[in-house]
Image 1 (cartoon, rainbow, N blue to C red):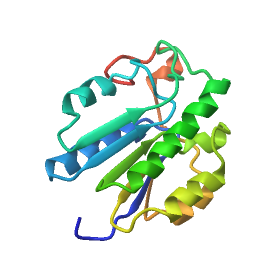
Image 2: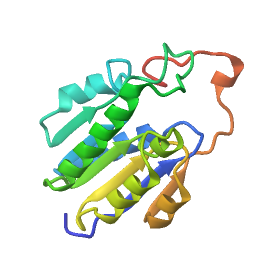
Image 3: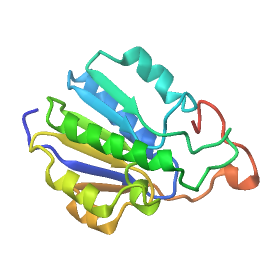
Image 4: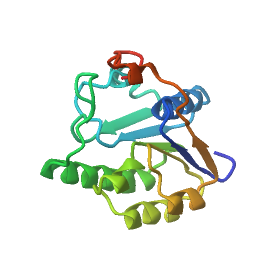
Length: 179
């Protein structure tokens, strides 16, 4: 990459944070950049983006997902932390630190912002990660509840604001659209 890497934040209560990160990944891969994606709290085969990423893996793309899916059958989220959630969050953070030393051009940390709010990681963990980002690495951090301290360190912050969503009428999340 020819210019200094930036820090992007996609946060807020609206839909589209992961989608924005994945769209950027597609653009980067199309420009022959090497992309890594680490999913926090999005393990298993529930999230359908994993299916297409499996097909793209190896074409300048690597990804890993950690933790158990918090979305439950499109009907709601599991909010309580299990002991294995803490282990998975730490393993994901360890993977980030490993990949930051490799030759990725773009690293997307999906749902990392929520890990502080859910107490899976400490704010200091995220600050350390951001401050130790290699100069040429483009870093994207998605998820609700991005701490103000991380926003202050970022170069680009986009807040997805919920105006209206059909889920509030009782409609369940739909495969291929919400997950």
